[in-house]
Length: 285
Ligand SMILES: *[C@@H]1O[C@H](CO)[C@@H](O)[C@H](O)[C@H]1NC(C)=O
Ligand SMILES: *[C@@H]1O[C@H](CO)[C@@H](O)[C@H](O)[C@H]1NC(C)=O
Image (cartoon, rainbow, N blue to C red):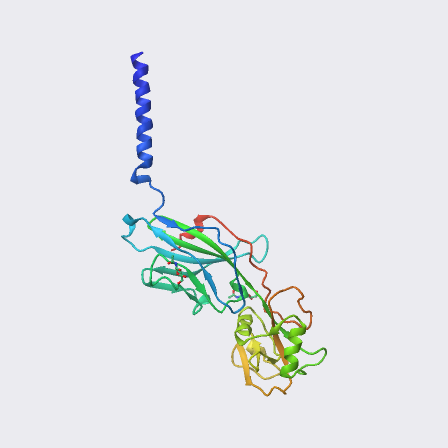
């Protein structure tokens, strides 16, 4: 009898100890608290600007070392059975911010200087290639949190020439040709974005600002026998509207996508799907 009472008491003690331990500071929940909501897909147009939200808080006791922020970009794999490609976009610790070359000059943390707990990232001059899932990661010591924001860059630049005739459109006719294809004349920034997505065309075409340009990927191949010096968008400058060229159009939607001599800058259908994978891959810092 005495023995069993003692046993019962021991059990209660043990339970109490467990309770105390589990509510004590040692096993507190994560140091980093992310304001995590299910982010809707951020959708923006080619050459536009996207704001990817990421804000977190820290437990006061942990402010000894600055948190390490990491933004990564994950693209769906090119082929179904390949692994998704995750690359670092930006890393920040204290006042040191490092940006991946592929995003150089295009990403900023607009709220970071005001508060190091605001990791919201802005990407400008958007390319179709930028579509995918962005992960915001905050690492403090051995503790971390991670949040995901999907981005979809839509819209496409295409080259149009009059049926069977090259360089047969005045500026006004070029404008009309785009409209007839449910599109508008492309802006220079949109042609540049398409160039970065792989658009190559040796055809000089009107743009909305009345300049005439084309996109060269492989200068060594030359266009019409004359060699170009570097890859990029060639610019003939502002031209007389009566001169005849082809045109570059920009379509917001892929529906009603024109078939005409289209050299596309990549279609905006990559993203939308949200990819998540294990935490093991993140400690490359
Ligand atoms: C974080 O920074 C962004 C960009 O400047 C700003 O719009 C947002 O209001 C900030 N959020 C907080 C909670 O400070
Ligand atoms: C962008 O997409 C094109 C076409 O898919 C690809 O060839 C190119 O390597 C990509 N560029 C970057 C920077 O991811």
